Length: 393
Image (cartoon, rainbow, N blue to C red):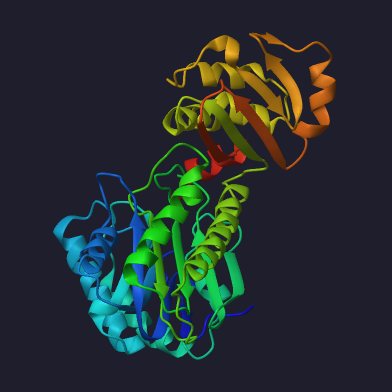
């Protein structure tokens, strides 16, 4: 793995979840970095989300991220905000960075206050881990119901030399942007302007992480944070450089978004729902989300059942403006429905092998308009119900 220049990683067990499980992580930049962030739109924003937004508002450089799993620090009021700030003070001393340059993130159960004794007790271990931990360790520390840690990387040449990108995320359930129960951290060693970095991140998140759904639920803690520290010595100056950096940032986030849906709680399928021909992108997204969030569509995916009528039904109640007779449905490239009626032939036989695949492409054309959208959606399984029924057990 080509790690971006100038970053160190940390991971420790504070027993926020279970004794011995990594549940506290950090990424530290050797020099303060340009920072960007995108956050949940839930009205009940968690304490670390509010803290990050406040810290990023003045545009100052940041030296790293601090993230815990096991407790969300959401719906915890003034005490939760105070605890969040105190965790930054504790970690700043352990990691030798200013507290006002450390961005926090949390994930886990809503409503519980931090046990600050555990936070204080774990700091020596967090400090020691800076010498030995790698990206995989930090990625494991942020997991909750994830079954695997999620990393993606890119290295590429700009006019001034090699630039590296590394992204990590967690997310498996309560996933439906904007955004999802997911945390995502990206580090880069290019020298890029703060304005361009924020605009690039927001744009790429909208095209990737904001285009996934597992269960239609939006979290209180969703956070995407990105640092660019310039440690490679490569400045992003020309238009070509900006295009190249954006292309690779998009690629890293696309890979992470796919891994989230692939690791959906109990998930076995990833549906690529493509909608075209809508009057506008908003209408296209309505169709994609109605199909991707439909429990009936999702359970059919789980059962490898080519019950295409559920897809048509969901598109019909999506609220998008289109004529029923204009809708054309293809599954795995097989034409299934057009002109208001199913195509002739044994569709069950044709679609059976397609429905057994892990990745299934569902294309829905609703007219000849310019609007389009794409959504990655998981299936809905018995394991999903079991995992979430027992989440706090």
